[in-house]
Image (cartoon, rainbow, N blue to C red):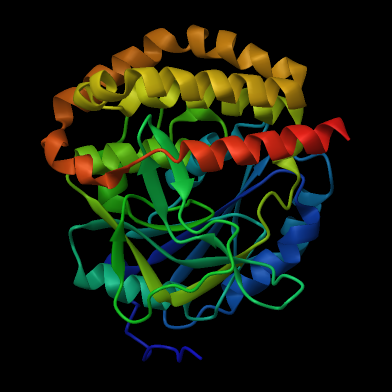
Length: 349
């Protein structure tokens, strides 16, 4: 069992942490969210909760039960990306925790990540080991051990859905981190700010953290996973991913991601694969929700702005992308096809 790190002096502003929770009709998760943040030890913590025009009683509950939190109420649903940008605008911490309402943190999650980040000034983002609820056998199921990038500009959560172990001891570098419980250095976030926000507001929800991964990499920042920090993620506990309008955003974002951030050297090498994967995404999500195909039109609508920000990203890039190619892994066609066919058969039953 992992033991907590020694308590550190976290009273100075340079080590202050702001936890930002973006809520949309997540009332049933909020007591657990508040409890997991209040239980954090060894950090000076501010809490900002952004409510995205919830229609349940989330706001009433937060006003009565979370007096220590800064509550930001949006009149419209700005999605996770827009909500994070609102939260960042209402916060001052030198470090920022992006926290989904359906995530439970170990009490020393933040202090562990803070200690590692303080010791590594080149690191922009960190995450602990994210686990899913235990399976029938009681063995841990991995939710995310960080992000990896596959050829064709397709990201994945490392280890997702597997009963697997992970390296113990020292942190290890990853391509990027999942924003469900992502820990960021504010200076790095400000370094990649664009007109669409630190988190690209065009994305609304899903893949906005990968877009951020790519922009941080372009500026020479790195990311790590810290095995001594553990969190449990229900994943889509709010049910958002199963909604047609969210699937429409996923289609849009999968099309915009390579347009915005994939370097020219990688696009020219992987263009056929990039196009094939996007075609598969459109087909898969449109079968599940026919209106998801409208995400293609949405992407076309956002194309001009995305190309403008692509130029800004390219002009500010400090790395040689050919030296970063080792982060791009081979696309597992056979595995992906088996999963796709299995899902198709399940829907047909």
